[in-house]
Image 1 (tube, rainbow, N blue to C red):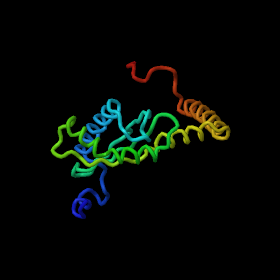
Image 2: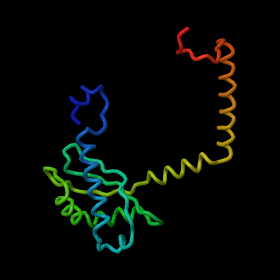
Image 3: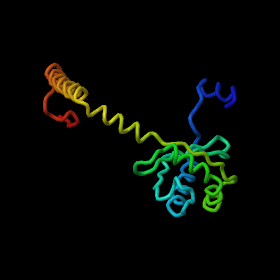
Image 4: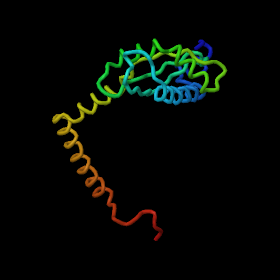
Length: 162
């Protein structure tokens, strides 16, 4: 992003444009269809179901990065590398399915967001965290009762006219 555009937007680099998001979703849906329908000859992809979590587009839409993961116990780095080897074939199939001025160059990265979500879930299920969360809920209930008693609030609906 140029310094001029960055300064005009408050000094911070902005996220992707609406156009980039739309093109990324278009390519993601097309890739999912292609991967479900086509038999890829790479041995690392034999019998593997691949999911495409997100596709990020460059500002000129000529390069797109797909975040991929395999369903089951497969190494995401190997899946991403295998899809990288098939990128030319996938780009050819993609050109037939989408209507963009240029068919983007495809890049594949392993999608680790699922692993991160599992890690966070495991942390939240730990006994120490559950104990702290339960203690926090008890404090909130006490605060609500104290607030109601102090304000003199009644059970009447405040929206009703008298």
